[in-house]
Image (cartoon, rainbow, N blue to C red):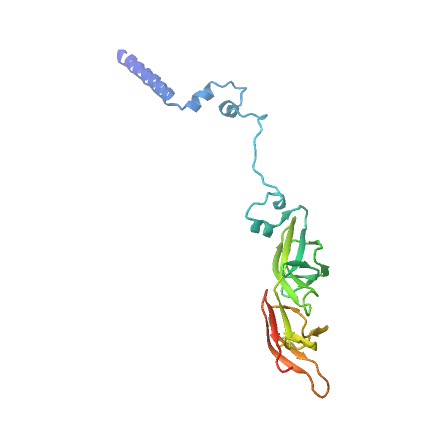
Length: 247
């Protein structure tokens, strides 16, 4: 009997010690939860956040066109001004020898067919376009022959205004017969072209031409015929007098 009582006493002490040890090893979080009333939210008690606490949730629904634009002046010009809306705007200025000139342009899609979007748009006029990539084909009668100059692969982003200054690479030449230049009527065309420029051109008068190589003829009569002139080179920004010999 004494032996049985001693065993029960020992078992009771072991259980008590085990419970005490577990209490000492429990985490701070578990002990804090023990102190929380049944009517209190444990998360609120531990974090201090309840249903009335404003919680910021990251959900970027901002339209890219409404975001501030950052970068160098060149990068800003490429990205365009923020205007909002579902379309983009395009505004072009045509520059010849550092001065703005009047001209027109057409807008083509950059697809394989080069679909025509708009035509006969005056430079300096702002136009609306669906977001996308376009080619802009310019012409001006400020340059002999009204040649075409193409600005390719211009991206028009949604909600932005894109501005471009389009420089036309030109040079000035004067076909002359000497100090006492005698005016004669000319025909003029780019080298290798099949058609002559429309319009009236003369020797002794400055000609503003797109940079490149040209052919000309001094028109004569049925007896003398036309006199061909070859080797005419025009450089971007250049100003030259070209002497026509034996005229």
